[in-house]
Length: 290
Image (cartoon, rainbow, N blue to C red):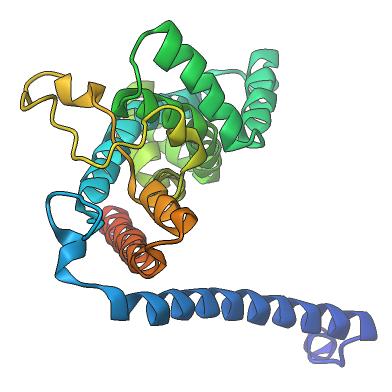
């Protein structure tokens, strides 16, 4: 009875202040997000027209279709490179390395440092290393590899935290039943950590889709769909230069001649991100049920 009376007792002044601050912060965050979405939709939807989705870009239709296709391609390449490396690194640090290992601590410090580096620095590094030193030229491959380095710390940290959140009893039960460490990791631990891993991948996709500075120096600004000069076999198309949707929007708004089309491009970009988030959440829920 005493505990119930204490739990139902009046809050102190400090508790009320913290409660009000938390509610205010939540309202401000939601209001800012809602205002941003409505502003983009109101200014962009009226300017959506068939010419924006034409296959060829020209000064009259300023089509976003080439940039949209390039964005999807560079996102796929980046994830193919970064996700296996990031998840594998996190699995090693959590499941194999000894706790308190100096090497793991160095990796953690390095990862946190890389997370705070501005994207323009990554772009300059990609230009010097991938474009110039490795002679990839301005291409989707150079841009994707640069973005892979950018999102690698994010995927590593989120995967590491997701793996740490899996109870040790899962591992002990699996090992006790005779399963090996590899089987335990891939059949027990990773499926349980999938929602957390996917949340990191979703954040990484958002950063890829919205990136401009790094791609300006690595992927280029060509307003055509990459095709490898008609040769889609092999990696020829990866070596072509092409602008992404975010840079396309930036270019239109900075020129000042197609501001309305820039708003329409922002609507398409917003819809793409929302669809990717929805699909990822559905996949996470399906895997969690399994």
